[in-house]
Amino acid sequence: MDTQKLLFTVLCFFLLFLLSGEQVVQARLAHHHHHRLFDFRPSKLFVFGDSYADTGNNKKSEANSWKYPYGITFPGKPAGRYSDGRVLTDFLAKFIGLKSPIPYRLREDGVNDLKYGMNFAFGGTGVFKTLVSYPNMTTQIDFFQELIKTNALNTTDVESSVALVTLSGNDYSAYEVRNGTTQGFPSFITSVVKQLKVNLKRIHGLGVKKIAVTALQPLGCLPRSTIKSSFQQCNGTENSLVSFHNLLLQQAVAKLNNDTKVSTFVILNLYDSFMFVLKNKGDQTGSTKFENPLKPCCGGISSEYYCGSVDVNGTKKYTVCDDPESAFFWDSVHPTQEGWSAVYSALQTTLEQL
Ligand SMILES: *[C@@H]1O[C@H](CO)[C@@H](O)[C@H](O)[C@H]1NC(C)=O
Ligand SMILES: *[C@@H]1O[C@H](CO)[C@@H](O)[C@H](O)[C@H]1NC(C)=O
Ligand SMILES: *[C@@H]1O[C@H](CO)[C@@H](O)[C@H](O)[C@H]1NC(C)=O
Ligand SMILES: *[C@@H]1O[C@H](CO)[C@@H](O)[C@H](O)[C@H]1NC(C)=O
Ligand SMILES: *[C@@H]1O[C@H](CO)[C@@H](O)[C@H](O)[C@H]1NC(C)=O
Ligand SMILES: *[C@@H]1O[C@H](CO)[C@@H](O)[C@H](O)[C@H]1NC(C)=O
Image (tube, rainbow, N blue to C red):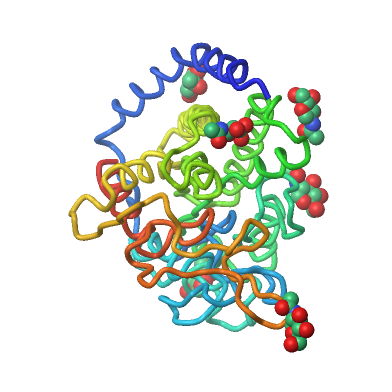
């Protein structure tokens, strides 16, 4: 693939959008003092997206997240989270002052199912068809809508809720696998962000007043990319594409907020927060330290195996570090609980400034 040509295309897109990007920043600054993230007390959290937010929706028989050593830090055994412990959803719930909502697939149609909201996020999914057959974001929102239609949720419930939407790149992985190259990426990125915008608008249309959406994390810094350099260097080409996605997202969100007249939509900038933590090798307080933040705690013993892989005899084909707290990444794409904690603490500064 012609990397230079790709970069050039991306840069052209950047130049094209630079002016409007600047207006976006100014508009955000102008509104700075009028909005807080939550100007009401949220009573529920509804979550849509992928493995960065999933807390147990994927099938036990299929997903890594239900296999040892996932979940060893929290809750102490595999329980459907793609980490050794807590993930973004859990930290955001804590920020709002709620318990982490129950995963949709684990609901029991009891009165307490919806007490703290509900988590509709399925690991491996995106806005379009990805490499897994789990419900895409559109279908996840359908599940939410169905709960409103059947009066399991009333207007008050929905209007006093917050939504978290994660999109961590499964659409892009699927595109790359299906197409074999990253050519045509800029226009695909445009269609992904367009669909994401449709989804965000729909969640708002159903009555949710505050919606936090993640910017794409630096994909080029994930262990699956940095393994080529023995976890020493991020892939700049991939990160440029990520920046393009994030620029489009910022513009889409600015437009949505202008349309709703209030800041309904808030971007959780996972790009900046991941980068901050990776550069500082820890959180800003210095209490968390990651020796080599690019190196994952858990991984397959060779490229055909993953964290959690076992052979037919049950012999493990992966290694786990002694201390997950000293690693930023848990596996080839997901942060550890300590990693998420550091990201959350970097995000909180941003949140409190809003
Ligand atoms: C999401 O999945 C449903 C069910 O498979 C499908 O009908 C729909 O077209 C998908 N949505 C998008 C935007 O790809
Ligand atoms: C909505 O449902 C909640 C329970 O989730 C209940 O406490 C509240 O009274 C209901 N509000 C209305 C207007 O029906
Ligand atoms: C693959 O890339 C080509 C070239 O940009 C594009 O025309 C085509 O639509 C892509 N195919 C898929 C399946 O996305
Ligand atoms: C960076 O990523 C691109 C796109 O996935 C890939 O083609 C390229 O080989 C990678 N570069 C390095 C140095 O790994
Ligand atoms: C913002 O909304 C106003 C109408 O309320 C419209 O005139 C203006 O063009 C919009 N600006 C952008 C950047 O969408
Ligand atoms: C599994 O165990 C059997 C019996 O001990 C052995 O013959 C076989 O080679 C083992 N398979 C693998 C993949 O290690």
